[in-house]
Length: 64
Image (cartoon, rainbow, N blue to C red; front, side):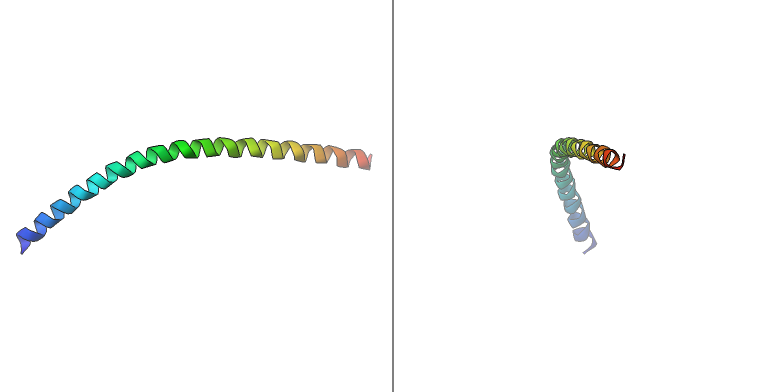
């Protein structure tokens, strides 16, 4: 019984290692996608900030 369970454990470990390698490869691709996505988000945020500044200037002019 013990011998058999040991063999099973070894097989499972090998399978896990193979899965991890595949996951690592997927993660690398995924991080590239994330970086592109972050750049797009930053660009949108900059546009929003510019709009807010314009609104503030208009409000100040109205008060004056």
